[in-house]
Amino acid sequence: MSASTLIAIIVPVAVVLIIIAVTLWTLSRRRHLRERFGPEYDRTVEEQDSRPAAERELRAREQRHDKLEIKELPAEVQRQYADDWSSVQERFVDRPNEAVAEADRLVARLMTERGYPTGGYQQQLADLSVEHGRTLEHYRTAHEINVRSGDGQATTEELRGAMVHYRALFEELLSDRGNAPRNDRF
Image (tube, rainbow, N blue to C red):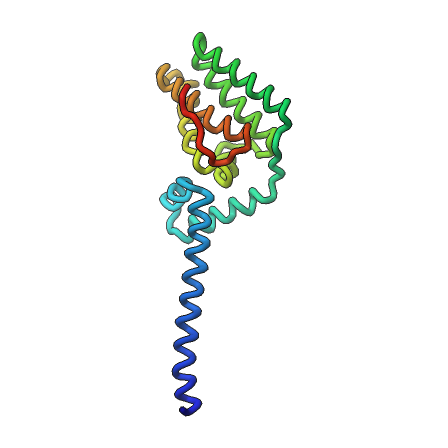
C-alpha cells in the first residue's frame, strides 16, 4: 500500500474520531449542565438566542458561584432561623401581606448569611441557580406574589402559596440540601 493511499485512509478516520470525541465531550458538558441546573437549564435555553449561548451563560454562573464563599451555618444559627420562620408563619394568620414580605426578607437574610450576594433580584436568581436550580421556580413565584402583594393585588390564597414557595427555598438554604426533595405543605 502506498503512502498516499495510507494518508487517504488515516486522515478521514482521524477526522471522524475527532468529530466523535468533540460530540461526546459536548454532550457530556450538556448533561452536566442539565443535571446541575435542572429546570433552570431549559428556562435559560428558552431565554437565550441559542443553546450554546444558554450553556455559556450557565457555565459563567458556575464560575461566578465557584468564587463565592458559601458556608454551612452552625446548628444554633440554623435553629434561630427555623424559629424566625415559625414566627413569620404564625403572623400569616393575622397579617398575610406582612408575613409574605417578612418571609422575603428572611430568605434574603439567610442567603446573605450563607454567603450569597443579595444586591439584585436577577443576580440572586443567577447565583442560586447553580446549587438550587430545582427550587428556583418557587423563589420566582413567591417573589412575584410578594411584589403584587405590595401593590395590593394578591389574594390571601396567593399569599399562602407564596409562603409555601418561600419555605421551599428557605428549607433548602437552611439545611444546605441543594436540590433535595422537600415537603410542600403549608
